Length: 302
Image (cartoon, rainbow, N blue to C red; front, side, top):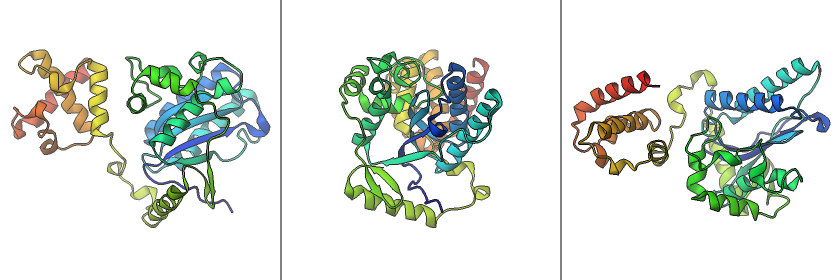
């Protein structure tokens, strides 16, 4: 009987899987490209936040947040669809992956930084490149550029590291062959002894409140943190929200965009949005019209 994996909604994980009997299932670029396409689609459908990835020839690494509580469904779909694709294109039968995915719960930000650096540095440890930034099939070069990634929540990682130099220096100097783990009855944890008790309590609480997938609504899934929405607004428009000149048409247009982001990405209600200084000169009853106008304009120029 398979043991339940220790996880809960909002938990961070380092996860990986490898080809059956060490088979090089990602030896061709087209296989890696297809896997990343699946990763984008599956993470969006099941609301799983990806923080980092690295694809090697015979295995993959992911750092993710179980943001919807559906991590098991996510991997079942991701591995299952890739397996079907691989068998079809390589005229093979039987298993594609070694087993179920392996996952390790991550304690907190300090361990999360270590895991991200460890995953990105994997090609260096394998002797494929001298610098992790030179490896094509990881998320290393998706951070600290103007464009937002479809695959990875770059804003979250950028906020943790602060600058591209910090990310580069930290990852390059991370000289560890294995991550620090603790073995529990439900799998390995990356963290300290004290966290193990808390993690198991969260896991048991999740089990006691578990509902069928049929009864889940979209509202059950987490929205983005408000801080992240403001961070991404600055990244896209190259200006702090509080510095917008709303006496100009351009400033009002950008404020309208921010209103849409806060409502749709952060899930805020109008009476919560109006508390931000940037919206203080708008009447509460006018926010609905402002949102509709901004949404219509954004869809027109998309």
